[in-house]
Image 1 (cartoon, rainbow, N blue to C red):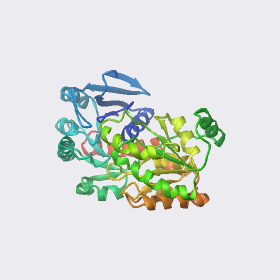
Image 2 (image 1 turned 120 degrees about the vertical axis):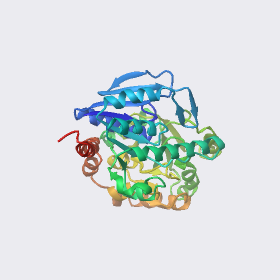
Image 3 (image 1 turned 30 degrees about the vertical axis):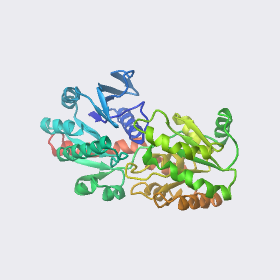
Image 4 (image 1 turned 90 degrees about the vertical axis):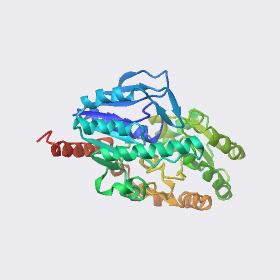
Length: 388
């Protein structure tokens, strides 16, 4: 098949959405499909076209940004070209341009599947509120034109302000997750190479420094955790200064981080091998997200595959990985006291939250995810009379 994948930000941008799409696209290519990713040239230094891991990336120039959305005047021309080329479309929301892309697919008789990654909920401001409304409207139009929608979990689909309106047309596909397997010795060597403190326990945080991640709730929980574990350290993996649209949040968070500067360590953006060492080094991983911008939390599965349980906020969808793996606990959204208590419980009873890696890896492998997408695409093609 010729598969057109469309989304606003693709790699090297770092987010759960971009990592998901990169893994899925590479898995499609490995399974013998031709794959083109249509995305934004969100930074002028990025090449307009390139091929990575068997995937052709086509980047459309950006003339301006409205909050996290981008304006690309030539996206329509590129969409006609690549929709006409494709057999099927995998379009990823939220995305301002999805409506135009799926509309073209409908006119040209090409099956399209919308994968919905999150309910967009930008911090309140005049511009952000306009962006929220605009994206919601275009998402509705895209859903009207698309053949089917895809969600990570039924739990999130039922609670999403967007997806709950389309439940009969939704297919549930667990997300693609992969991470190298490393030994304790490799993880310890990596820690030593970074000159990180060896004091325990280590609490891991693997998120962009963004308002929806609820980092302040972990910081507010730290004093409670420190009463029980006075040597506790926080290792924060993920982009900080380069996160688009989060300047105000960084400023707001700075005083809280300063209070714990002796034990709060920023590690920056890590590659997959480094992420494996990071998770393996942690005693517990925390995902304190506060709204439906977070729909699952791929990092929970990565952490579990490295043997580290997670404490996650009980958001729809986000509360599912600990249930699916048996490795962790959830806490009420924004409740720092409950977060601290869940962390302490896991630190006191680590064996109760350990499960074998292999079944988890098989459940969430990119190949398993790509195979499920294939089944949906082939079914759509048969229904349109484009294959027997």
